[in-house]
Length: 203
Image (cartoon, rainbow, N blue to C red; front, top):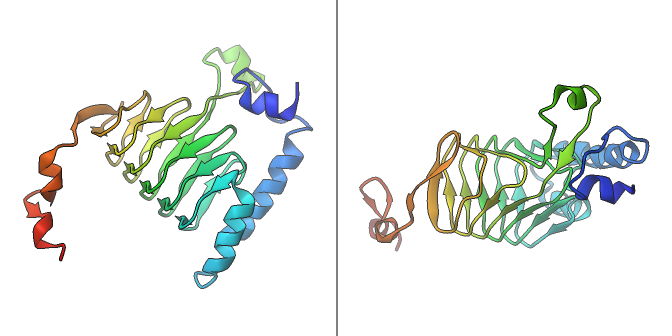
């Protein structure tokens, strides 16, 4: 089984093989360098992200420190994706994040899992399932998104939510486990927070 088949095929595999670790370590070295850039080195950061990620569009920003199993090697960002401090991407297989999505601090997006059977976990077996997040989403601070989840376009995931199942387009979803609270509606286009009107704050 090839390196790519192990990581992206969905089957059980041992992640510490000689064909995996050298590639992973190379990715982690580049991630270390990214996290040690200075705040004034924005152009350097942008160049590094384009080298580190599978795909990354224009106008993307990740606030260090940033953590990732493969340093973004299997991460696909659209345009204008923003991620705050302490983003953790367990990118053992592919993570897709659409245009204009915002990610709060301390968010974890994981593609790697382990069997429930203790005999298999004792041997170190792992499996991976991709995560997909649509365009114009907002992932609140401290949210955790587990392997195999898809989040639809325009949806908001509340702070601290644990997303264990797919979330549809155009909803607010919160909780542990994360569930749809309501659809995004006309009131959201009139008020941005509690009783604060959008029209009073946008000229």
